[in-house]
Image (tube, rainbow, N blue to C red; front, side):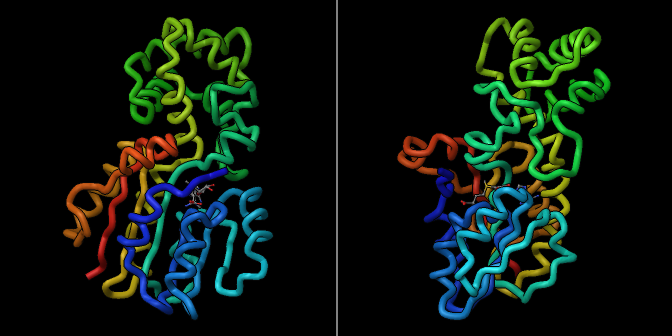
Length: 278
Ligand SMILES: C[S@@+](CC[C@H](N)C(=O)[O-])C[C@H]1O[C@@H](n2cnc3c(N)ncnc32)[C@H](O)[C@@H]1O
């Protein structure tokens, strides 16, 4: 089950009022939205955007009797084109969910032997396409920029060598290539998978695109909360704040308390920034 990250901090930070409307740009199964729905009762509405069709179907079923939640299967990157009333708050809790790891069978984790898909939607290049088609330089860039992998060049070389013999199709195929370079140091595996996932889903481009559009959907005094899990994502939010001289709730990002990380290790690298629209 996916446990919402920084739930209390998000609710307090957004400071929504009764009858405010709200946009959840990364709805999943509404872990945050369920609580927010109470905060904005009795009339406040929620627009929930979820890119993953499988998750979207589950969410629709879960909230089928909830008249104040409106769900759409789309990317938050298209927020500008999505018609909804002015809102008091927006949440972007970016990246994947526990469901992707535990149940999707799309190769999001090195712990299971699955096809290297790693896509949230049908659009885009799968991780398999990336591994078997990108140039050495592009693979090195992905691994180094999004995975902070010091041996990115060596891994890229090993991938090219391997794919000449046989295409890399599954998570274990990939591990068999990288483990030689990394001398079985499994520490780097999650970062390599993270890097491919970010590239496949164009996650940083999407975040860069949505921030100005999210700001323009907020009413005056409304708040935009972004939870990121990767330094590249947090940098994008930080730069956006600086470049537009935006007002923020906290100068430093809000991070989970030790107790939350103990109970939910996924929260470990979470950073929450809250922007207030002037
Ligand atoms: C970290 S989970 C959100 C969890 C949710 N806040 C909760 O606590 O229940 C991120 C969700 O956003 C979805 N997602 C990822 N990229 C997206 C995008 N570009 N547009 C819309 N949804 C996206 C994922 O499929 C996933 O369900």
